[in-house]
Image 1: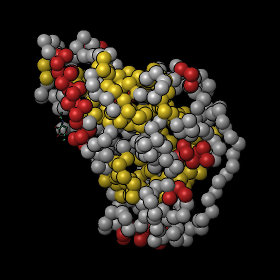
Image 2: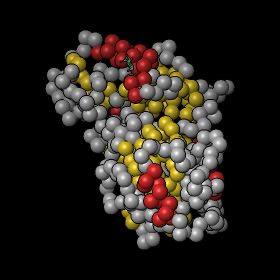
Image 3: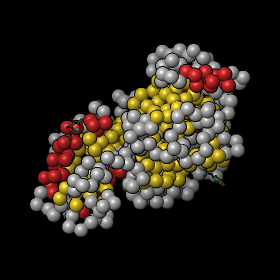
Length: 429
Ligand SMILES: *[C@@H]1O[C@H](CO)[C@@H](O)[C@H](O)[C@H]1NC(C)=O
Ligand SMILES: *[C@@H]1O[C@H](CO)[C@@H](O)[C@H](O)[C@H]1NC(C)=O
């Protein structure tokens, strides 16, 4: 069954020589021989004037259905070349499929990135941030990494540095040298998109936004606005929205890796239905949303109960998603089924403050398949091995600006028009 499902949430990072995949040692050998002539060691930290009130804006391409993925174009290297990356708030590390040479690369959008000789050394704090606990490097001159995603996809490689060409909304062009993964051994997941790599937007030190902050270039704030019509934009920095119009909730500190807004209650048709304490993660790398088996079962029962006596029948022949319903005539838009489904919401418990709601209107949890059926875009997380948490994916974040403020440790959202990227200093809300 093709679900067009991309789940980029990072499950594991293994870094350090010997920890990685068996059978790759020949290639690693090749890598360091080739690399041994480089003169690295000094971590160049150019000090630039603080561009405190500027942002970097990327146009976003793609959609949840039918494509099943989004991407941004980044320009990398000297001279800059374009690459298409999947923006993923579920993982930290940015990496590109890399001609190191490549042992296994998946289908890409551009010729493979060719690395420079600027390797990140083992003792660099960025390398440490990719490890859990103590780590040793057999080769002090390089930093191996391995990332594995919830859909089974993975990338193995080494950290390198190169120049990113970024335009600030103020008009200034930046050319910072940033570290990222040169991935020379990728395994495809359930449905790996034909892209050049991943733009890791998680809260870890290795993310390129955290590196830009360290260089004094932008605030460590990440946001995205996914349009229900496809496309939208992604930004780094905090000057393109009005913070007073955003619904903020504290970032949970329990989850060191993921963007979690703490525990939520599911609201169905405006009412609580006894589904509380849902630990929810915001993950732009997932096309759809996921609930743990118990919550999923409960939601499914409520939806099916609502459809009772209505002219909708389960479309068992439509394999677009696990549950699809057909009407008397094919549906064209989610609007056509508005009488049959109820809006959802997640209500986040902020302690003493009023609860903050994350609205999930019909458009944010149903899709209309190519067969004209309405399909449920909330899936069973237990089926893909998610045990303790639930995921808000792209579908449910559509037509909202979602902001991850790593400086204030808060996650915010607000409805927005995501069709047109804002011009410098114009607000989208
Ligand atoms: C940056 O700005 C220049 C000049 O306006 C433009 O040609 C270029 O395409 C922009 N780059 C990106 C990544 O938006
Ligand atoms: C969700 O997936 C788990 C694991 O595959 C399965 O045991 C459970 O029955 C599923 N729940 C529903 C409601 O389909």
